[in-house]
Length: 305
Ligand SMILES: *Cc1c(COP(=O)(O)O)cnc(C)c1O
Image (cartoon, rainbow, N blue to C red; front, side, top):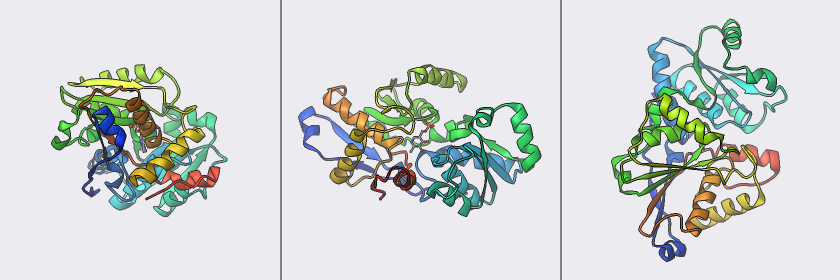
């Protein structure tokens, strides 16, 4: 249904790695599919298969106006022959931004709702109303995180990645972190970087892991210091770092997730958080589609590919 491309692990070269006696590599999950990029590919694939199995013809999901999840779901639905509906946060969202334009091109029906109503999106009442409006559908939650999504992200790590000591990944809902937590080995540490402000994510992750019956064999660590003001927020240092990173390594990052994660990793390297001998693998979870919309919003031109 969704065909993955092989994804390389790129070893990065920089004098600081020698100085600190570490290695840093990056798993280019952003290259797994041209439109269903990064972790979203893994979160969607089992859900699409399940929707088919249940005989559903429509996928319905939720997201913000620049959502990677909306972009990926619209493309995945189109290529697998589903109808798709995107319920978008904010009546004032710009339906002509690059994310939503693409979603429409992929045939997604967009339904804009006010922020207050959006908060009720998981109530039975609201879902019932959506059924009346759109007919029967297969529901994919905001951000795409459910049990099937987590099982999908368990497939991100391959045997060849077990030689790394540290795996670094961005956290939004934490679904991807949960899947990776389930697949790391005893000798590995998973370091998550929250793109949201606040410590709440630590408890949230514990709840999610328990809920999905995941007990990691390895070590888990969640860093909450690199949110840059909160979800979707940024500061000039983040942008400068991303531009520098692209110049140095020719790898584009996104400002919502991977930029913050890479910034965090770079800082932790500077603070000797990783022991000498560490082999660190960052996961590029994608999100580059958002860089176009970011330019529209802020005027800041981020590298794309
Ligand atoms: C959605 C997304 C994440 C967060 O994934 P979760 O499973 O929600 O934690 C990280 N990076 C990118 C690029 C994303 O699009």
